[in-house]
Length: 146
Image 1 (cartoon, one colour):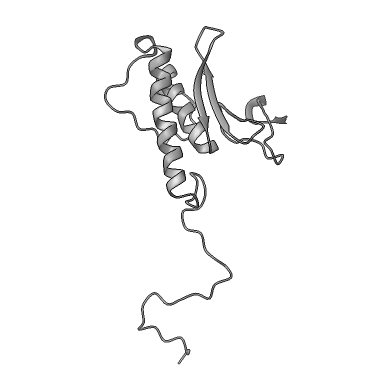
Image 2 (tube, one colour; image 1 turned 90 degrees about the horizontal axis):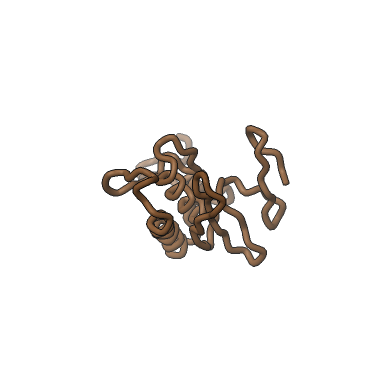
C-alpha cells in the first residue's frame, strides 16, 4: 500500500504501479472492477468488471455523482455527462444507479476495444514519434536553408 493525498492509502497494481483512480481495483487476472458503498449503509453497489481502469473509474464517477450530487469527488470531473435532470440519491435505487454506471463503463470499454491505442484520459492527446524525421506541413517549405 502507498500513502496518498489526505492520508488515504491506495493499493499497488500488478507491476507495482499504484491505481490512480478512486473506487476501482484490479483483479489478479487483470480485469478492473468498480464498486461503491451506499451512504449510511454497510452494503456496496457492484458497478461491474472492465478491461481498462478508465472504464471502471468512469463507472465509479457516474455512481458517486448520483449518490452524492455535484459535491462528489470525481476521477474525471470534466467528463461527466448526465442525461436529463439529476435525481437526488433518495430518488434512485441501488439498482438504477448500478444500471447507469455500468452503461457508462460499458461505453468506455467499447470505445477502447474499437481504438485500443487511443490515448487514455489524462495522457497526451498527440503522441510524437521521436524516431521519425519531421515532415513539412505543406510542400511550399524550403528545407535547404537558402
